[in-house]
Length: 124
Image (tube, rainbow, N blue to C red; front, side, top):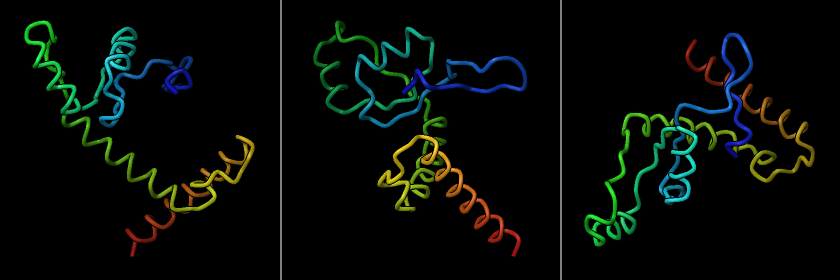
């Protein structure tokens, strides 16, 4: 998925390397962390309990504890809630649209509906 990332700036071509990647504990494997480290991307991934226990059992050979930016991880929750709102629309959740173009159009439509609902809620 990271190969598809394009971070647009005000000028120039889009960057293909984000500053940080946030994910849940399912993505905290050594391989994922090594991939992010090679690309100089900050990993905002909490460590699983069993991974931490295995590291501690190895003693000094187990490596250093994983650093974790709690503030950045909290921002991940905002994105998760948006994804859940998008998936509340059955067409998005079940991927009825077969072509990428029609699926993207559905995402734009659903996002517009969410935005309008939030806009009318805050103005009244």
